[in-house]
Image (cartoon, rainbow, N blue to C red; front, side, top):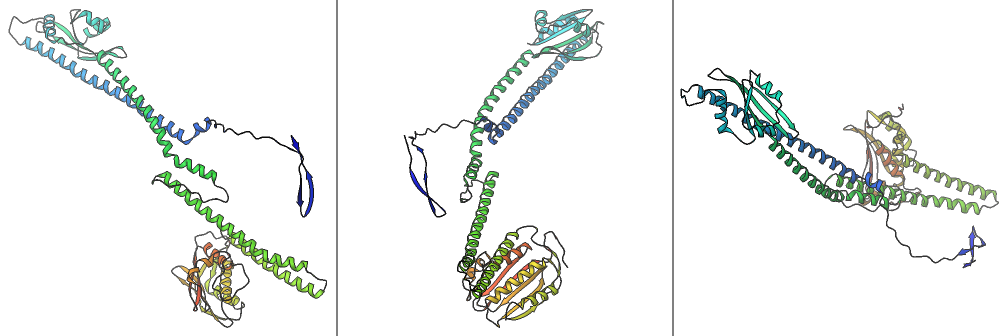
Length: 512
């Protein structure tokens, strides 16, 4: 179903009839689809990176701890087995010595018998004894020893030829090691033999393996639980950052009022606080910019209206034309001054705003005073002249003096006294203009240095946009100084510009 509606469109005051064809459709209720999970974003998120780093750190510490524990257990086992072997060998040597010094004929008098009498009382589980003499070897239990130790004939051959005590180990499997200690023995009947004590650590190694496995299982379970807790904790910890992202996306050019709640005193809280302060500064800058354009458009609208009205009413009379041209020229000059002042304020924050050079304070003060006396019929007085050299922008500082003097002249009557002066004090240069005018209300002392502000208590009104004192403040602050105001109602005002003798800013150009 279609229809052709007719409607009127007015373009620059001329109505025109337009037609269009519109297709009517019945909108269907929209179904909000669930947003798909963006896996690349998930894997590249800070939360995932923190968790991956946490898991890697935990795995590294876990594996290192398990390896260290296993090695320490084996070192402890080796130490314990070594002491037991030394004790067994020492006891056999003591047994042989006790028999050799005894005269009891009922005691054994050869190596084999001594070995058999010793092992009859010293057989301990997982501990074995071997005796080698005359090419033969004797052991505590051949079947058990062969099964557990699986001795190689080369071992017996190497033991039978030793002349000094010897220690070593025989590796069966990864979890089975046989430690031994062998010593040569000389008996009273002249017989030579070798006594070997062996300890099978298969049981202990298997226990170490089982303990290691339990540690691995418990650690992995703990790691999984810690990972879940860390995932929940990082979500809570990074919540302010996500809120920061959401607010950053929702901030528009005209709305900077949103702030992020600050919780705690950690680094994220500091970041949040810094972000809020940045928003506050941006809001202040945008508000200032908005006020600047509003005031500028308002102030420029008046001369433009005057120019347009006079041009529209321009008559053919040459005299009237001359007056109109003079009036239009005057308004254009006023607009030009406005624009120049606004450009000057816009440049005051740039690093190349000042062209610094060494300036003699005495000559500069006298030169500025000579220029000021032409501003009006006032009782201009040079109160004090400072001595020394100041690094400053001569042209900009002259502009400061002229603006302050012109402001004083506008607030005083003809013949009123206005004092000009300068001096050096504590490494700072002071310049002041003092008048005997009506004074300024203390409530607006700081306000009058803002742009487009005129003193509400001024007894006389003058043409201007209220940029003079704002320009003064911008120039002085660009020098690294400050502007001070001391004023009392019905007594007068003193504007003092204070700048450092050598400002901490680069000198771009040295002027004579």
